[in-house]
Length: 595
Ligand SMILES: *[C@@H]1O[C@H](CO)[C@@H](O)[C@H](O)[C@H]1NC(C)=O
Ligand SMILES: *[C@@H]1O[C@H](CO)[C@@H](O)[C@H](O)[C@H]1NC(C)=O
Ligand SMILES: *[C@@H]1O[C@H](CO)[C@@H](O)[C@H](O)[C@H]1NC(C)=O
Ligand SMILES: *[C@@H]1O[C@H](CO)[C@@H](O)[C@H](O)[C@H]1NC(C)=O
Ligand SMILES: *[C@@H]1O[C@H](CO)[C@@H](O)[C@H](O)[C@H]1NC(C)=O
Ligand SMILES: *[C@@H]1O[C@H](CO)[C@@H](O)[C@H](O)[C@H]1NC(C)=O
Ligand SMILES: *[C@@H]1O[C@H](CO)[C@@H](O)[C@H](O)[C@H]1NC(C)=O
Ligand SMILES: *[C@@H]1O[C@H](CO)[C@@H](O)[C@H](O)[C@H]1NC(C)=O
Ligand SMILES: [Cu+2]
Image (cartoon, rainbow, N blue to C red):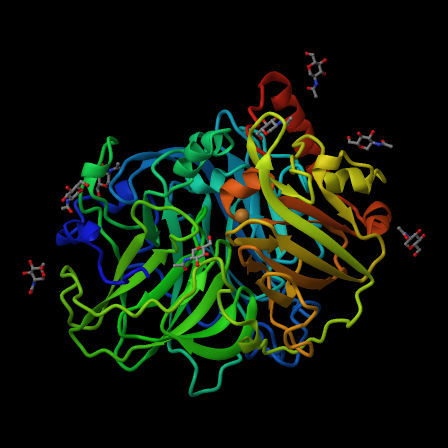
């Protein structure tokens, strides 16, 4: 088993805590990871507020979160430019692609029911982009989900595009580029949506410390990694997918002897402040490219209050796991005394994925602690299973808002997930025998809106027609697990395990729900959803290298409504014309599935 103590590899690196590098060199314009980082209130008040809460009398138990988002009449506007920049988050300089010069990128913050408007200018001279708002339903705006070739054309270089969508669920999430593996070069950031609180007074938190982004880290640009990951030699593929470091809120040190790139020792680790006796909310987000994370804080326990956008009955653990794309909101009671300090740790699960430095560290300081000294604290025992097994028992996870899914679905899909060489010898992922590839120029949603639902087979479109309750039985023929993410819905997690499903459903009265689920290695994942959201919704592995390799399907629902009732804004067509003009004169080097 992995020993959670500070490994030998890190001992030397950690002798330097004082950052030698300025924040503008490590993280650009981002303040995450510093003691001056923003803290959050229970909701935003910088708008005309009625008395009480922005969501009025709605609570976590009296309103269906999927259909009853309040109408606040408030629009939160953001103005973003995507550009290339050299940064050194861990001291190693590397080419990055960032929003407004910051890694991690800007925070989206809203109240439940607000509209969010993000104007994006693509400042890259030679490639497209497109941003996805992870976990939101996009019920009224399925064209703004941000997946190029599925709901929109990529935003062409020099073009500007405004996303306008509703904060239709509440809790913690993130946004990221969905264009190839571009987010792995830095196009990502947190998204916080305030909503009703389901906690008893004795459980409630006092201080919201905001996002804790966990990202496995690579020193090469995404394009170079993807080129190798899509190759024919399995050893080079594994080597290319192996991360070189692991960051918390964009920071960590690195031992410069292990790279030939320009490198400065002691870039610095993230710092957090705890107040003795108070309860702190931390919003854990696995925003990495490949690795499952095991997160803990020395000598403190974590009370989970929400998984993805779903508030749950609180449960307490010393260490939690998060697959890529997953979030856990946790409350940490500050039991330490004044002057003390502790390590926060996140470790990449290395039985299934590779990393030459999987241990991320941050420091938690109590009042009067020496904020430039290293903590000297005792790690939590490693209690989490590896990624071949379910991350946390589904039967122990109870959503606060109870929903009983239909016992008998109208339609069931069985999908088999496997890795094999295609006829050119490249190792790619297959979904029931078909490896996905997108056509950036012809978004599926726009074709369906024109009444065309006959697509090439490698677009992997599953058309559920008029079905209302759809079940998917996913079988993982591969030995390692995958974080399976579904857009436009939360999934009822009916069953998940190794081997073959025996037909048993976990908590059929109120199964757990989530937008990203870790399917165990050599196992199954059975989920169901209510197809009440006409659109084309990606269901894919969130490991950047796997979705690049085709581990992806489109679940299209209610094509008749898409064709008859959907008024797709003109900007969607204009974006396709701009992309057509760009791709007419520039060869798009689509080295992967496109997503
Ligand atoms: C850095 O790594 C090198 C080579 O792997 C090792 O010999 C050295 O001890 C490490 N330095 C520190 C300070 O840990
Ligand atoms: C970082 O900021 C310092 C001042 O705080 C400035 O002197 C330096 O040039 C900046 N470096 C970069 C790379 O922007
Ligand atoms: C590592 O993964 C393999 C499957 O790939 C599994 O059989 C084994 O039990 C796992 N090892 C540990 C230490 O969990
Ligand atoms: C804080 O810790 C640093 C690093 O260990 C040390 O150099 C410094 O003297 C300490 N400051 C105080 C006030 O103890
Ligand atoms: C096999 O996969 C590679 C990598 O995606 C791709 O470039 C190639 O076109 C594929 N070959 C076939 C025959 O589909
Ligand atoms: C529908 O679109 C696909 C993809 O562009 C195309 O191959 C097909 O010919 C179209 N079908 C009709 C009926 O227009
Ligand atoms: C869906 O229902 C409509 C009527 O509500 C019907 O016209 C259409 O044929 C149905 N589509 C499918 C694919 O069954
Ligand atoms: C693409 O280029 C051709 C030849 O230059 C031109 O006729 C056509 O209109 C262009 N198409 C677009 C969409 O720009
Ligand atoms: Cu995967």
